[in-house]
Structures are given as C-alpha cells and as structure tokens.
Image 1: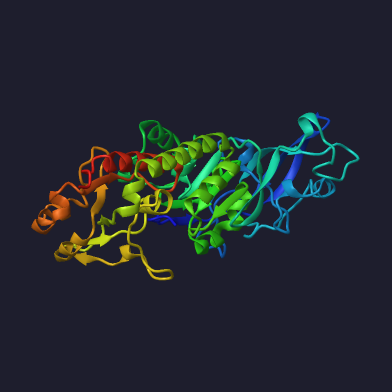
Image 2: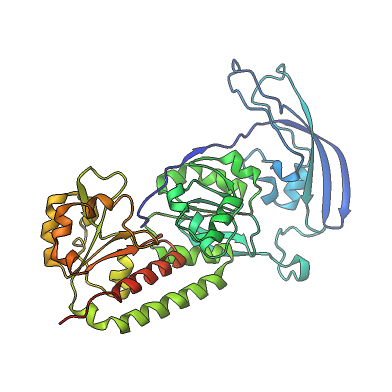
Length: 417
C-alpha cells in the first residue's frame, strides 16, 4: 500500500446534446469514410436556463469530438449497421431552441468496416487489419488496451512508477516538489515534459490530451465516481490502494508496454537482494534493528517506529529483523511517540532513520537527532545508527536506490567482538 496518497479532485466532462446535420460525405478509402457535420447548440447557455452548459471549443482536431448515441453508447463502438442507420442522427437539445445557436463545422473521420461485414473485429484479419489491442486484467476487470500505447495519462500513484520503467506520459497528476526532487534528473525531465493535471483532475483536460490509455491508482470510492467518464475518453486500467507495489509494477508494465525495462529492473533487484543476503548473513541472523521516522505532519516533539515504507523491503525481501505490528493491527508508524521514549531504544542493536542522498538526516527527522536523548544512546555513540536514503517504495528503480543506500550503510557497521 502506498505510504502516502495525493488528494485528487475530479471535474466531470461536459456532455452537451446537440442537433447535427450531415452536409458532406467523402469516401477516402474502401474502409474509411469522412463525413462533415454541422452542429447546432454548441454555444454556452445562460445561467437562467434550467440546464446551463459551457460552450464547446476546439482547436480543430478530429478527436475533440466523440458522438454518443441516445443509449449512451459511443458511436465508435456500435456495429457498422447501427452506424449507417444513425449516420444522420439528430438529438434533442437540453435547452430550448429559442436559445442562441452557434453552428460549428465538425470534421469527424468515421472508420467503417468493409461492405458486407457485420463484425467490428473480423476473425482472421491479417496485415494492417490485424487487431492492434490486447486484454489486461486489473482492479476494474479485463480491459482491452492498445498493444503499443502512444499517449498515456497517469492518475494518482501511477505517475512515478510508469516513468521509472521508461514510460513517457502525456499527462500526470500533482507531485510535491520534495517528492519530485528525489527522482533522477532524467525522470524529473520526463515528468515536467508531461502536461500537469494538478491535484484537481479536470476530465475535460484529460480528454483534450487525446490519450489512448489511462492508468489510475486512487481510492476505490473516488474511481467509481469517474470510471464511466474515463472509459469514454480512453481504455482505463485501475488498481486499488491495496495493490502491492510489485503487482502494481507488473500491471503498469503490461498495460503500458514497458515490460522490457521491468524485466531488467526485476533482474537487478533479485540479484541485489541475493547478494545482500549472502554478504550480511550473520547480521540477518543475529542483529535486532529498529527503524525510526518522522513525518511532516507529526506533532512537535514526537517520532514514530516505522514499519511501513522502504523498511518493508529490508524486512520482507532482505530479511533484516525489524519490529512490526501484529497481524490485523494498525502499523506501528501510526502511533506518535514523545522524544523521551528514545531512551527505550537501547534494546536494539542498530537504529535506521531517514536520510537524504548525501547521508544527512532529512529536514523532517533532524529534530530527533538534535536531542540529548538521541545523542546519549549507546547505539548512536557506537556507530550503530544508520541514515538510509529512501526515494520511494512503489517501483523497482526507487527500491534499487534504497537497497544501494542500505547496503553501503550496513557495510559501515563495526565488526562484532
């Protein structure tokens, strides 16, 4: 489960109903027909109207429009026969016809299957007509996605893991500067290149990016509110917050077509863990560790015994002996402890605490190491307090950097007499 969750506010799509008229039809190829429509009702309506709507605006690209049939089914997903019947579809405006009307010329490429076929995905298609999609399974069930997506939007906790595996999203959600600053420079550049959707996710802005895939990890309740709307924009793959980080990486790699980089990272991770288990076999068997932390919202004069975050890698994968909460109980990290209780840590052989990439205590944890109680601990004075850099625990790249820091710190431990 992610250690933190970025708060997101989602704004709905604007779905005005308009009256349209086909004014021109051109057969571009035997399998593609372009029709030009005139739409009436694209202007904004006055606030006094019962159902006000925003004006439609488009820079002129086909994908800014997605016709929806009366049933709510996107026309692009209906059968060829249904498309032909509804080619001159007229919808009932939400507002009175006496309202100001603006005509907008909409050029929409309608892809039709060859004449005589009633199947959108004919069996036995080959060459250019071969299916370009595959099915992945996630928290929202089996989803058909592009085999090689080109325009990926990431929402919630999918941003950084996707970038870590070599992906280049076209849209990302908000990340704190402090979190972004922990990334390698090339990953920071990728994040900044993408359009920021901010902490308040505007679905119209998402749609304007014309994504062919949307990757989401947010609370289940929040996703349910926008699932259908996201699905009208692009295939949407969702994971709940209870998804373990390795499973999330696998899912993102499969959906986002970055499995080659994931395979390399997994190989590096498994090799590093195996080497550390061998190198520190005696330490693993005989040493009692405790991991401390402090958060930006921690009460003044308090710290926590942290059993969530990067320490889970040290405990579960490397095998180091750290305390953790009993099964079914809240994590130890949920309880703030006063600085005075630092003296009780003398029963542990090694203390680990959060440090930056230079090995110095993080700004948030600094108040702990400045106390006299900390300085008086035998564990500290004997060189058994280790600062560990944790850039994140939700992707293999970040975890590998954590293991590098942990490995170097363990190597500094004085030999037992």
